Amino acid sequence: MTVQTLQRIVILIGVILLASLGWWAWGLRAENQIEKASQGVLKAASNRNWKKLQTYMASDYKDQWGMDGNQMVQSASNVLSQFFVVDIVATAPAQITINGNQAEWSAPLRVEGKGTAIAEAIIEHSATTLRSPFTFTWRKQSWKPWDWKLVSTKQPELNFDPSWNL
Image (cartoon, rainbow, N blue to C red):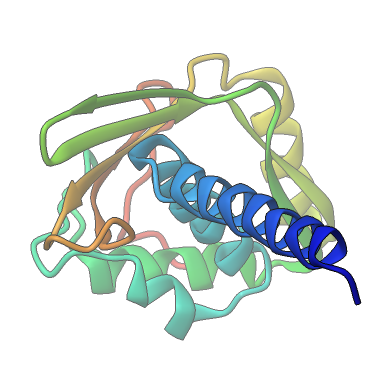
């Protein structure tokens, strides 16, 4: 192997390492972490993975319906139990606003799937009535770039009473 070949290999490895470092650093941006966490909430709810959903919740979670994190997860479990198949999706790109250790992720959401008559009513309601976006409010818990916890959820058109039994 010649010196020139060895130099080219070293340069190629250096370029690959720098590109990898840049890609990694881009992924640690707060906007990317908020998007990833918000999509994680939607995926955990869609998959009805309540333990996973709970990991996104701050200990002091409180939403517009007066629920704490445990109550929110229990209510989501009750509502989504009406579905045989469910997917909760953002129907437009999210708007992300970050102010220090607080962030908001806001996007219109739609419920898709199949289920009981209640599930079909939920699907219809999400498609025709809920025009305002859902807003997830996040708080950064530590120095770690990925350590964001959900502290609140709101959707002004969604009237929900946590005491309803489905």
